[in-house]
Image (tube, rainbow, N blue to C red):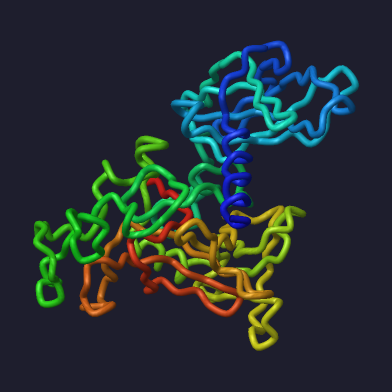
Length: 364
């Protein structure tokens, strides 16, 4: 009987905190959007409940692309003025997208909401085109990033929208969550290893409709092929950096090589066996910065191995040039660019449902 009583009390507690619209609307007041970009917003609200007269008071802003009663994301405010005003900063938004939002106040286990309002994020900013002398021009920052050191959002191979959870069960191009039941991008030389009943379309490079760089930025931007990543490695001077321009972000500064001897060379000050020295300056020489942002699987960002942070970048290529039957020839792997303080690898491959940052290229 004691266990049953405890269970009933637990259920009552959960029910009492359900997000139901209260009859009084003057406790929470939805404010205005004071700052708005492509991927972030700063929003004001007002809490008219004095915390001294309640058991507890929590206040903030909730937002969603659709129904606030089902899929809302709460962002709790941490500071409030003497007159009850507060602000919250929301990041990770999608460019050129409509959002609903409202202020909320939770006190004594009861939610109160302000008026529902909307905002539309601005378009994706056009990155700078950087000519590193390797054919295509490289973008100055990742997709969904507004500066070189920002990671941006993570995308599964062939998907154009970020998600909160990455697995075969949520992957766009497979049937019933089965990794060997792919519905698109199945090379013909994978027949020996293929157990699915989907089409063998023979496509090994992403179509523009499935290219997030093209979808977000338009022409002439697209995702790089693995061959173009190879040209970046073999044609530039790579310098490992632990704090890019004071941002605290690790990664590689990829310089335009000043001479043929520097092409394909790598300098890693953290790795004592690497003694390559190059006369390059982040303030004066042409370069891009690739932050070490890891990758995402399920809802976790992976790639941080203690003091060594790994970088992973999606290519548009399903299979590696000159590497037949890589990963057993199965079509559920895509080829990626991977690096750490110790190496740069353009023949790495991970499952297509894994999510990685995207660095676009432009043909002109």
